[in-house]
Length: 148
Image (cartoon, rainbow, N blue to C red; front, side, top):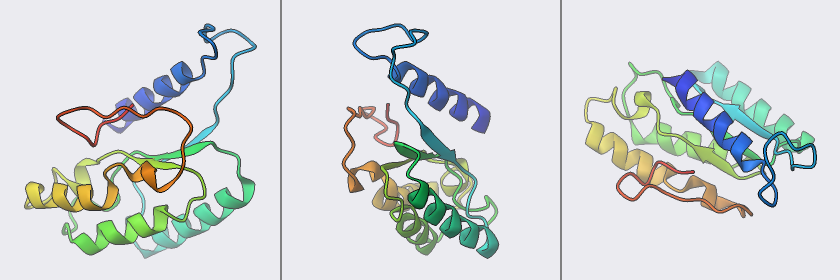
């Protein structure tokens, strides 16, 4: 599933590289550089690593945006709102617009998926709106967590 999501994101990024209706292989087309992360943070060591990654990323300023492809916690761990709040606070430290995809660990793998989706929506729905982003974002009508 993760590989499929990553592939979809990569295809989205390639299609977004068009400029003035140029074809993708046109050397004059604009290149978009972005960062993709996922399956993090699962523990305190990974949390510290994420904090370090965010700091280094902000210093390099190399990406136009960041996409977290979900799974902010191990699937077997309880789905406590404090985890969603903590990761939201961490990801908001990125200087660049950051998007997050709903992962199965923070929704399907929870004892109460409805409550977990509420936690995710409260902390991550339209997460990119914490920043100014110059591209148009569209959200799926019935599943607002899905975007393009």
